[in-house]
Length: 356
Image (cartoon, rainbow, N blue to C red; front, side, top):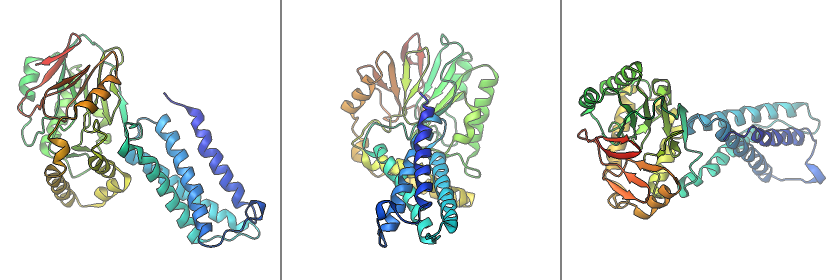
């Protein structure tokens, strides 16, 4: 639910900063020696970043984390530079580069603090986003569910299932490829073939959605290719009792992965890959994914049954499904879908999930 009134918060903080910078000294005659004056700059601009991020998060739920944080960082940095320039005209005040650096660093630290719940809790609104239609034109149609195919060169099972079920809609629950980075020069021929398949299905009037997993990065540029593209938690149909997410964020105890997930979807990480030559970026992403396969196995070998049940029960009145765990598990109203690496797809049909 959008809350336009939240925009008042960053406006109030920005107005307070402008007022303070218009004074020849701090209120009540307070004098802040160096470096406390720089810490004060960092604190107020950190507060501005937190307020602006909260307003964007609620009112622009279609913005991925990296884009939202880059927007906030740029806005805070530019506002800080403007505020410092303004102080040139205030008697008794001076414009200092160090103050602007403190403003910018404060904004960055504010964003970092606002992101901490994404590592330790199930409050994942700051990481979650979606674009498109969360409803199907014809809910009576079969909905084929594909979880974790981990395709490489071949789209195993896709054409066969399409030929056998030409009228079905499709929902992919993440980890479609071993690694998929949606940046120029980093996509493979098989990924382009998959996108062409999506185009053909939608041209035929079928609904196609993709909910990103832990092996998809920065795919928001492809949002127009899908009826629904999303990430994080909160996947749910309007008018159908089906809710979903990929599953990698179900276990709040797996903080090491959650920290990596946050870093790898951040604005600095996006900038790093954007600046790399395509071949170098592909090699780095492949190396990182290969390293991740052999780390943190303690949390990946055992199904987090209690955590999964708790998340499923937070979606009452629905069937809650995930991929990620590569095994079929049922807890309360939740179901983890089996690995689709050999074309073992599932289907949502008549209010139930069953094997296709």
